[in-house]
Image (cartoon, rainbow, N blue to C red; front, side, top):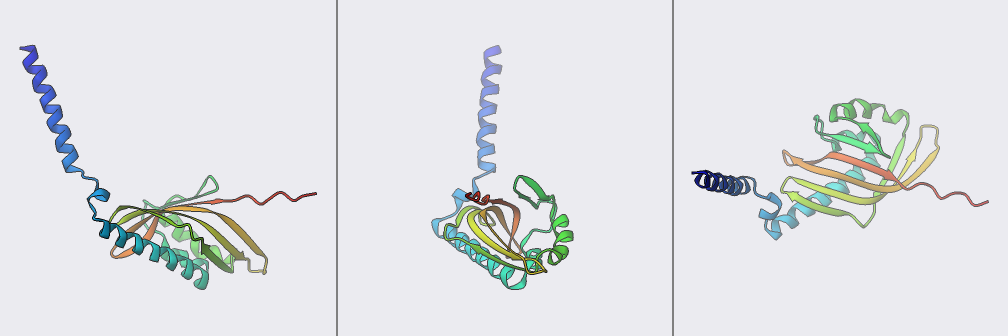
Amino acid sequence: MRSWCWMFMVAAMCMASCHAQRAVPDAGQAMTPAERMAVEESVRGFMARVSQEVTTEGPTAWSKEFESGPNFFMASEGKLAYASGEAAAKAIPDLPKMIKKIALRWENDLRVDVLTPNLAVVGTTYQEVRESPDGEETTENGYFTGVAEQQGGEWRFRDAHWSVVPPEPKKP
C-alpha cells in the first residue's frame, strides 16, 4: 500500500510540474525572430526618442519617459533616487531649478534584450552634459540600464539605473 501511495504522489508531482511549465510559457522564446526584431527596433526607437526629447525639451521631458505607477524605481550611484513613478513625477517639475539644459547622448553600444513583446532590458554607455541655471556645465559619462515596458502602445522606463564613471584623478 505504501508503494502505491508513493507512486501516486510522484505521478501527481510530475503532472503538476508539466502543467506549471505549460501554464507559464517563456513568452520571449515563443516569439518568432521577426517579432523579436520588431520589438528590438521599437525599443531602439524609444531610446533615440528619449535622448532627443530630453536634449531638446530639457529635464522636464523625463516626466514622459518614466512609468507613473508604483512599479517604477530609479537608482543612481548605489542609491535609490525615486522609489516609485509618483515620487519621480513629484520631483521632475523641480529639476529646472538645478538643470537648465541637458544634452543626453546614448553611445553606439546600445544593447536590447527582448523579454516579451512588451518588456525589454536596455543597457548602454551614455554622456550627459548638464547646464545649471547659472551657466555652469557638468559632463557625466557612465552606463545606463533600464527595463522598458510598453503599455497602450507607448514605451516607458519601468526601472532605471545610472552608474557614473568617476573622473580621472588629476595628475600632480
